[in-house]
Image 1 (cartoon, rainbow, N blue to C red):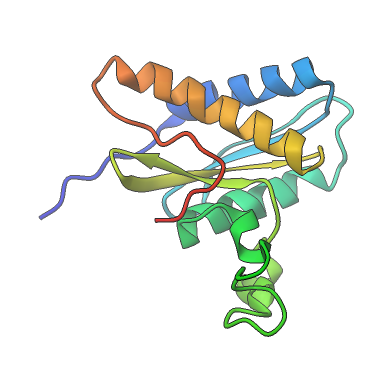
Image 2: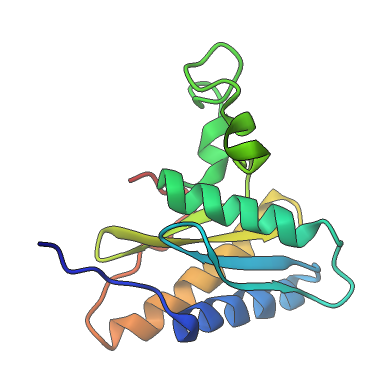
Length: 159
């Protein structure tokens, strides 16, 4: 039997609030989604004025990061990104009825070496989405350190 750590609304809110604060700081309008380990949204938030397409894209990125246990941009990072033409997962973005996101902005949420969910961001360029996502993960890391839990905070995550 395995004990399971599950991200809940309070942690998801902390992540989103930090990501939105970073987005405001860097001057970008983001949509941010935090999903559970099954890829289902806990929070999906679109900043005022952000693109109407952002929420679905953010969810897709979070879903992919949680489900495939890796940062979404790693699928298309040259030269060995598995979703690049000629590589073994080329076309994977067509999976899950087009919900699989193989570009920057999705990060698994890893607590004590287990993937417990994902965060996805849409609205900025890759650098901006990454900065906001890492701010969200860092806020969670800072909070869970009080409980002696470790959160992985980095752009390139592959479990």
